[in-house]
Length: 316
Image: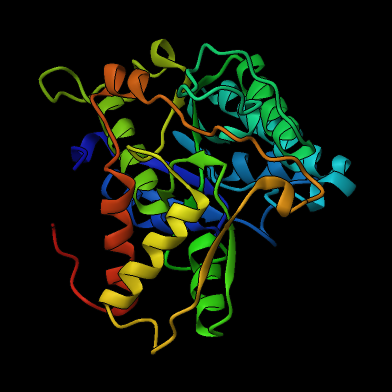
């Protein structure tokens, strides 16, 4: 908990997304939390964005909203750029004006996915699609505004709610039909709950002195930058789907369905937007700077599946 005289005013942009849902709960430990989404703020309207931030006057602004329809972005590049690039730049400008901290979530899609080594923050980006290009432009806009900022690049985000790969696999599995899943793209499935908790811990660290004394985010500027934040370990989409089905069977969530899981290659499943083959992210900088490491992806998957089953989460 933050001391009473150092409680923060936190504004989360985004109300219904996976990460924002978890952020709203974890950030309550640090101060007062306000979430703004439609209709309070329209990310394609610069005035709406500025007005929402000025009305809230936050110490910390967390941008958990984005245009995430990867394939649709190929036919809506201007809209993707407005939401993913222009809006974050405006947010950062407003936080620069008040001297606050901006936290912005980014993606593994800013890289071209070549090779097999985990991507480091110092590696040159090279997005393969409009979505990735719009997110990279947003990262650059936040940096250019020169506000104190944390750009947290994550990957393969999922949760027990919302639209995501895990819920899609469970829905299709209930139909009992074969599931054809790509087995040559590799990354780290990352639970939104882990992202929210890690973000909360970072902000708490930035708001304390070495001996726990209040410091009102005085070290945020010197630690500004890009950090990778994904689960430990990696797997293919096929491997992730297999783990989901295994956990589902163990917890009795499959309702007797036992669908066949078929591995396929990326060319077998053509999409409008190209996907990176290698989405591994190195989290070494995050740990070296803040002492924070997310759990293994399979450990977090068990927790989410237990949540869906209504069972108490256990450590295995």
